[in-house]
Image 1 (tube, rainbow, N blue to C red):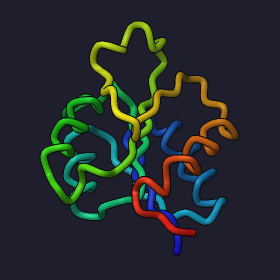
Image 2 (image 1 turned 90 degrees about the horizontal axis):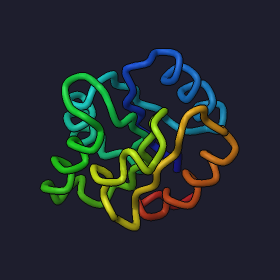
Image 3 (image 1 turned 120 degrees about the vertical axis):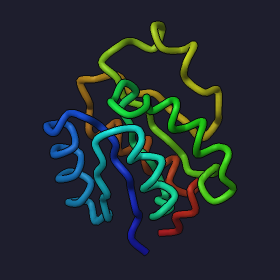
Image 4 (image 1 turned 30 degrees about the horizontal axis):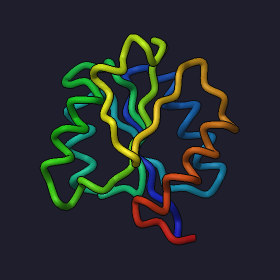
Length: 127
């Protein structure tokens, strides 16, 4: 089985970097550029995991998370929130959920991939 990962970020450099890196690890990657598309594509593809920027056009990643939680088909998808802002500035809007994590930019790809591997089984991925 190939892990299916949805990336949502309005920065093409970030989505390109993550797409290339995760694809090179054998994952199927779906890329969107705003929070509205994030909620729409998550429902359509039901990925094993979502990586999302917090501040994006359309809807914040944290707002898209709230939408996904209301749908039984998407509520169990693990999410990793990414931002250039420190956690202390964002903790009020980030969910307190065991299947979510926060990573601050600049990204350490190896550390990020370790988090991804930790969360994938929660999203139904079985290697």
